Amino acid sequence: MAEIVIRDSGERIRGEEQVRAFLDRQEVLYEHWDAAKLPAELQEKFTLSDDDKAQILSTFDSEIRDLAGRRGYRTWDIIALSDATPNLDELLKKFEQVHTHTEDEVRAITAGKGIFIIKGSEEVGYFNVELEAGDVISVPENKPHFFTLMDNRQIVAVRLFIETEGWIAHPFADPAFSKA
Ligand SMILES: [Fe+2]
Image 1 (tube, protein in one colour):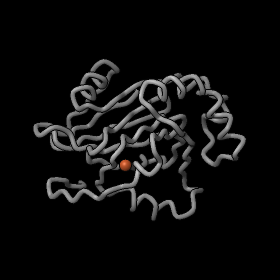
Image 2 (image 1 turned 180 degrees about the vertical axis):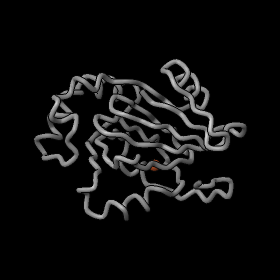
Image 3 (image 1 turned 120 degrees about the vertical axis):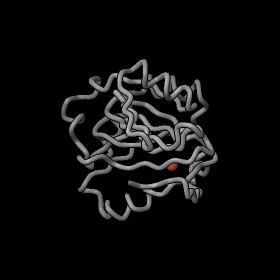
């Protein structure tokens, strides 16, 4: 289940209802899939063959098609990151910059963990959304954010797109953002 950390105050928000209510107010979509549907060996596998990816997509086919039908996504794929990923540190450096997109960024975590850092409303400021397997999030278009891994540095996620070109990152220079 996702947890929230408000970066300025350090306040942590736990519990499905509280997390959902907070994300609702920040206009971030949050849903949950049953990650246990995935065969056990794929719940802990972060270097995936094409067959593994196809199996993950078919396991969650009804969830993917339901979400796509409601929100207009037309294509989807699987992304897997771990220490086995070539240039992982370089990739993370690129990811860890505040940016926006012209379409929403939706991720359904199927294994591992990750964090979205999102610019919230004026009174909230930046907040972390810590995600684990089963968590589904959509960061709205034009909302400044970035993504990074957690200490275990392992994640598998389904990405869904309306137009793949809509997901190009536009840097968002924000003096209000502080990394620490
Ligand atoms: Fe992004």
